[in-house]
Amino acid sequence: MRGRLINPFAAELAQLDTAATAADPDGPGPLTSGYDADFQETVLLPSPSGRGRDARREKPPIRIPCQVEVQAFGALTELPTGNSPRSHLVLVFHFGDLEQLGLVDPTTGDALLRPGDHLVAIRDLSTGELVQAIRTPPGLYLTEAQPQSFGLGGRRNLLLATFGERALGPQGT
Image 1 (cartoon, rainbow, N blue to C red):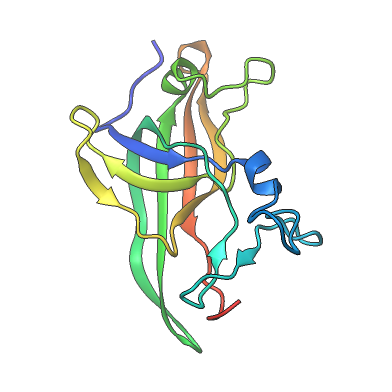
Image 2: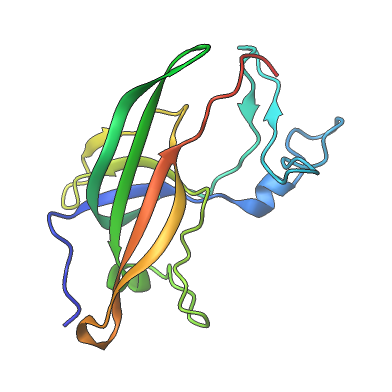
């Protein structure tokens, strides 16, 4: 017996596609990668809105059963340039579900959820109906994936995944 999630939902995640992001983001031009050479962060590309768009590329979204623990959602933080909403969610995943979906490395036992993976939405587990879309920007991104609950049934059971928003940069590129 490995336990189970309480009141499960489905997290819709878009995982960062590092290979596609590292490729030339817009074809011919000065950039040869979507990553900054010094900081290894995704770069902002020019856009008609003048705000810039992230060069990150994502894999198609996947749905994973989870338990949702809201720490903060849309709390306002004052900045010199105005208010910025702050959100912080913890999603609890069961390793049994991750194993079934092929999201555990069989060699190391590591969950294949990585920092930078993007939370797109929370959905009803049985119907797939949208419960909460995550507005992007700022978006909510995985910042920590921490295995927990070792020992129940002789195995580890839970993965606590912490999601937070990315700070918005200044207007322009």
